[in-house]
Image 1 (cartoon, rainbow, N blue to C red):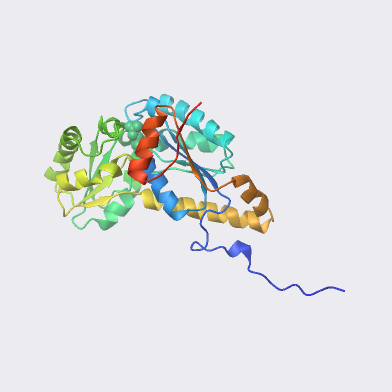
Image 2: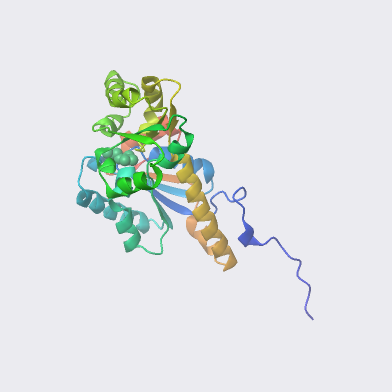
Length: 293
Ligand code: DGL
């Protein structure tokens, strides 16, 4: 005799609202502390995911290094994160994405690898006078990926680019409002003000932590675009689809078991105490950072 089985909810129909990161193990990295802006957004979207963050502070900044140097660091960090069992990698660094995301994707074709790029597209859409500033590292601005981004999404506006050498390094110190930081930010905003931009893109993941300084240098009327939330949404979508596939193939239980307790772990190639303090101060995140080995 066959007993009728009550139809349960179709797990493959997990909605964006109901998926909070169950079973996901996400590795996030940056040249240093900047990617914490992306980590913060991912934590909001996926509170049940296991997250591992690597700050490559001993090798920061990447923004004034050549692509070979950055690609080698991305390789080391990705291997480390994969050894922690991650099933998704977020390259939470515009400079590293521009220099090396294509290499990582070629190396790990089955691994979802999410990169970040300056929010030129949303900025052009938001700008009323069609004058948009892009603040980023020299490495990001000189990359082929950025040139392609401007060709694809920047044609409907005047795009004023401004490299900010030294700014990420200053933010790495952990203080977010110092006279030196204000002077750097004011200097980098001069050309954007002269060009009368009404929208400015923060094209480096370090810069959202000093967004108030940019806002005060540029004036209250200028819209500041930061893509960390969009990157987190994209990451959540990718993990949700993967989770639905695993559930469909009845592998979700093992995936959830693998994911271990929900937590965020931090590692750095620099000073673990500094990362621990900064995560507490900037993200209200209590996690004792380890040394990247
Ligand atoms: N936070 C990084 C970015 O988004 C890089 C900063 C740096 O290391 O120069 O570009």
